[in-house]
Length: 247
Image (cartoon, rainbow, N blue to C red; front, side, top):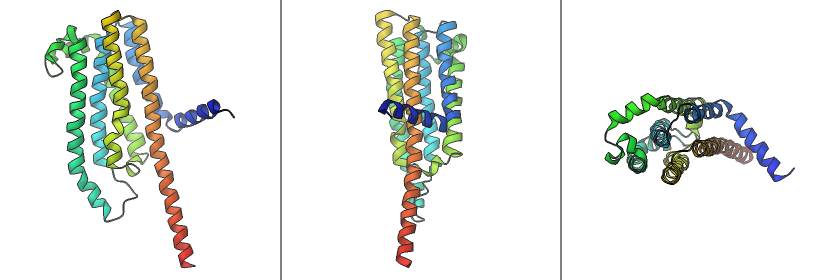
């Protein structure tokens, strides 16, 4: 079997394992595409949606950190793990919040002429909210939010990932997907300056972002699954060692 076939089968296996959350992600990302094709959404509306998704990802990651309870910790380590949240959760909130603020500056200052962009991400939200409501872009933000919440409940809570990741994992986990969104924002900004907002360019932007977002989504859950396998393997080894010592 060739490497390409192996990679395809591995990717299909990952998709099948997390089919429900992956499909919800694709459906949610299809809403901006429909907005561009049928409702004349502008580049500013698209990157504003993606910036709002940044904020949603950060908020859900805070929930993940609060619920995190790795099962490989011993009895003495669990209190420390929960106590560490008192430092890591506020630290992540401030650090990620500044990261989103910088993204907001790019979105509103570079592209927000129609929404009062030069006031930055914290000003003139009445006009921006009216713009989102008028175009229907609020539905896209709601769809992406529901998709991330669905993945949080189905994979993280019900799927037991909260027992397989640590606080240090969660500190860095969102940034890979956020970099994708950041590149989408920059690409949208520079392309708008050069070409305006042609439909074909926005379609490329949305499809590319969706493909990368799906890849990061599957990779995130693959890592959590691999950790579960490592923990089981370690437990079996410890059990075999104990059996050997007893015999």
